[in-house]
Image (cartoon, rainbow, N blue to C red; front, side):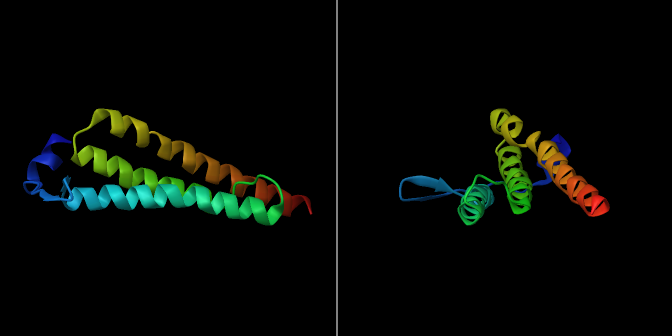
Length: 110
């Protein structure tokens, strides 16, 4: 990992509205937007069904959001953030596997 971080260009930050901004900030904001969208998707799906449901898209957004957020924290060299997001990806992939396994079983049984 240090090799990868060693070849990255120096992070140039710009101060705007009293905050530090950089290209890494854009990665973090993108990840946060994707991560937050998954809750909106879950809410809409639940309202349509009239009960609490978790659509498959929730898991895909979870994976993508986690990857972006982990990348952001890796680039910022923040171990707390890395450990908060990176391991979750495996759980989200597993949930997708379980969803498709259930669908295959239901098709087979009908």
